[in-house]
Amino acid sequence: MQAPQEALERQLPRALDVELLLSTVDEVAPGGAADRQDGNGDAHVKAGLVGPSETIPVIDGALGLSTWQGIFFCEFDGPRPDRRISVTIVADE
Image: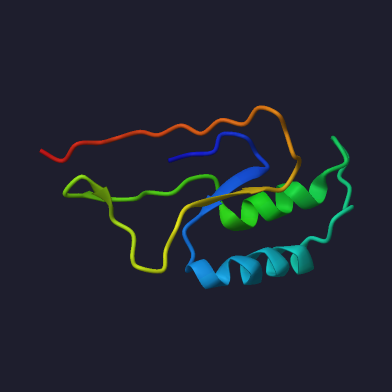
């Protein structure tokens, strides 16, 4: 699974750690930190910290997530009306 936009990311943390993750990236790159291109430098730093893609195994037809894991998307530069993700399925034969 990949989020091709630079400021939209995905994570699979434990469900209780979502707020901790978001507050930590806000401390590292506080909102309003500008860059030379488009004024959203903080969004690019945050996106770089969490990364653009995730590999999730499919086990017996279900996502191989642990009890406390979930998929969520971080929008660091928005909200935007149109965001897309791509999903690639690779068969192991």
